[in-house]
Each structure stands twice: as C-alpha cells, then as structure tokens.
Image 1 (tube, rainbow over the protein chains, first blue to last red):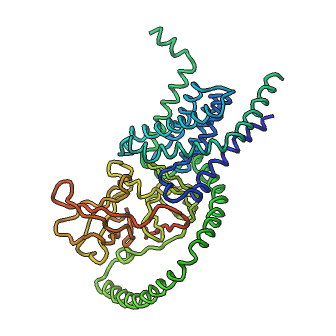
Image 2 (tube, helix red, strand yellow; image 1 turned 180 degrees about the vertical axis):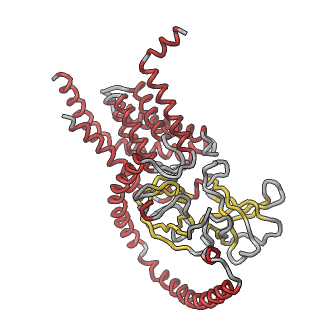
Length: 176
Length: 292
C-alpha cells in the first residue's frame, strides 16, 4: 500500500546519485562552475505543488541533510535548512493540485532562486563567502535557474504521473 | 505573559522554533574543527559512497571513450613530446640519483636524526573520485579512500596537474576533499596557508598562499619579502615549511606581482595548474608521521 511512497523516495535518491556522478560528465566544462544542479529539489517542488507542503518539507530536510553529510566540506545543515524552508514557503503560496505547466515552470524558477538565495544567506551569516550577492546571482544562480527550468520540463510528465498515483493511493487509504 | 503562553500553545509555532534552534546548533557545531565523524554520518556517507561508486566510474569510462575518439589526431604530436620528455627524464634521473646519494652521505656525516632524514619522504596513494559538487561556497569531491586506508584530515590531495585541495572529513570508506578554491583567510576552518616558493629559485623565494578569489579564479600569495626574485611566469611549488604540506607539490604559475596591502611586502596572483574539472583519479599524499 505504501508502494508509491517508496517509489518516490527511491526516485529522489536516484536523482541525488545522478546529480553527483553523471551530470558532471554530461555538462560542458565551461558550465561546470556556473550550474549547480539540484535535481532532487526540482522534484520536491513538484511534490509541494501537487501533493502537500508538509511532505515536501520533510523530504527537503531529509535529502538536504543527505547532501550536507555526503559533501561535508564546511558546515552541516545548510542545504537541509534551505531546501526544507523554500519548499515549504513555495507550497504555502502555490499549493494547487491542478496547476498547469506554465505555472509549475515559474514555480521551478522561483523556487530555485529562493533556495540558492537562502543558501547564500546562510553562508554569509557564517562568514563563509566574500562575494557580493549580485555577482553570485549572475555567476551561478541565473544559469542554475535556467538549467532547472529545462530539467523541470523533462521531468514534468513522469513526476506528475507518479504524484497522481500517490494521491489516488492516499485517498484510497483514507476512505478505507 | 498569558498571551505569550497562548502563543506557545500553538503547536506549529513551537515545532518551528525548536527546529530553528536545532538548525542553528547543528550548523554552529559542524562549523568547528572535528576530529572524526559520528556513526550515523559514517553510515550515510559510506552507503551513498558505495552507490555513487557504481555510477561514477562507468560514466567516466563512457565519457572518456568519446573524448579519446575526439583527441585521436592530437595523439601523434603528444606522443612525440612525451618521447622528448622521457629522454630528458632519463638524463635527469641519473643526475638526481647522484645528488641523492651524495646528499644522503652528507646527512650521515652530519649525524641527522632519523626523523629529520624522513622529513621530506612521501608516497602517493591513488584514489578514485566517486562524486562531486561544484557549488561555489562548498565545492567538494568525494573519493573512495577512508580511515580504513589510513586517510587523515588535512592530508594534501593532488591531481596529475597540481595541488587540488586537502582532506576535510573522513569516514570509514570514503572521504571528502575540500578544494583549494575554498581557501579563505577570513574562514577560521579554512585549510592552513601553504608556504610556497618559486621553482628554480627555492633558496631565495618565499610567500604564503592564503586565499582564492572566485571572481578572478586566482590564488593570492602574500608576504613575499622585499628583493624576492619572483617574476611573472614562475611555477610556484610548496616549500614544505610549516609541516602541513609536503615539499614540492605544484600549485600554479604566477600571473602578476603587485605591491601588497601594506606596501612593504608584495603579493603575487597565481593561476592554479589543476583545472578543477573532469575528475578521474586523484592522489593522496601520505607523509611520515610527525610528532605534534
């Protein structure tokens, strides 16, 4: 009965693995420093819009923490906080089960900007970066947004189908 | 006061506050230097490391295959250059062996301590990259050697081109490399500054490589004394002073030399030789244990 949920979690884990291992090979070298792929977060944005913001919050916290622990260079919890909070905030505003494609795409753009800005904020608070915000915006946040937009388009149909199935399952569970 | 209690009765707000405090505690705690990781971290890192290992290597082989096809016509030229280099190496090796033997004899005569003799010995251990992130404020690479292989924090990591960074965290079977691009003089946990010197001017040249500027992509070498012969185009290597970094690791080439912030010493801007892209194999530098 909880089949669909574990499928979703497995999918997120697979995307996490792919973004650390396969994507650096696929991206052209010149873009590597400018695009910071976060495929997991795109799917979490889908979850927050089409499913529920609380699920997205938990997923964001968990997978953010996974990212933090695996790529532990300076600080733990930054991604966890940024992904959880921005997924929740986006869900608070845009949680529409029938949202059309254009709206979802603007949510992807907005969400990745929000997430990167929160991350930037955390690093600034702990005095870990010296660059001004507008430089960071042009250097990596905007390219990342566009990249996420393209990936969002690719993932739209399969992820939405998964979420519909998940919804049906939870409804059945509730009525039973 | 009563109103405040009512506010805290709200379950959601309470959870929110607790989470916020937890996060600040975790971040503050993780910011400090840590000798080792806790078991949940070890477990998570090693299991994901195992899965990532399954993905990264095949992807690298496939990508490398296509790259090889593209590079095929450069191969003849490269081969010729390598032959010349090999010939030069054979000659230098003979000279090196003579000098080394002579040096050892002098050391014996001067009655060097065993520890002093081994001061500059180091060996390289090859490590496979298993995943990476290029985020500007936290660029790190995960490699497949861990504490079971004898890795310790702050060991230097190099690629075939030059120095890449230092080990920041170690779990049982994987460890994280903090790239040199994270070097920052304001960050208390940044890797320690590298004592550097220019190749072929080792006796007269000195400077501390202290920070990296992501906007220009150059390293900054400060505290170069007056009258230092350092010039544009020099190759900068680590000098081995200070003990953290072994001697002779290639770091970069000098792009420009300017007057330093206080006018007395000068500052050199260095372009790193490692390009921080297309990772395959890295080498971890194992030095002799030193008493601390």
